[in-house]
Length: 140
Image (cartoon, rainbow, N blue to C red; front, side):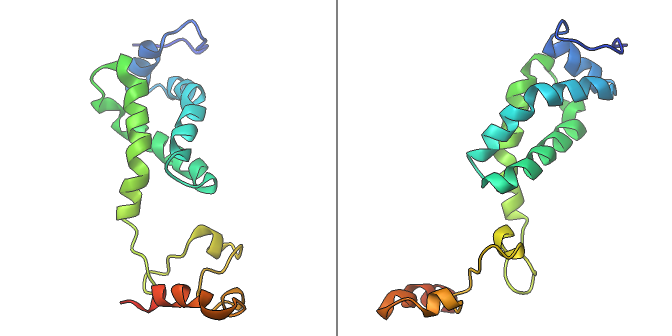
């Protein structure tokens, strides 16, 4: 199915999806423009704001690779939103955390915060306020 080079609002979503399934990148780009903000909003319910933009791109990459498996083009929006809801949890299960992995929270990697209990801020806490912080990291 050939899609005109000018894709406008006159084409319905199912037509765009079928064109994208047949390899039309312009059609997929139009779908991205139409759904990008919605995907971002869904992701904000699951991840911090600073991670939502990266994950939104991951949602569309996954959508593009799995698009041939979508049997009903009219169901594209719901299908894409399901990917957006599941992707953050799927990525969390594939991350190995801890000192050996080298993974640290994004804010810590950027130097925005220090989540270690031995930070100067934790040492400055009065009385026993720092013990819950220290105890959390002492468990193995």
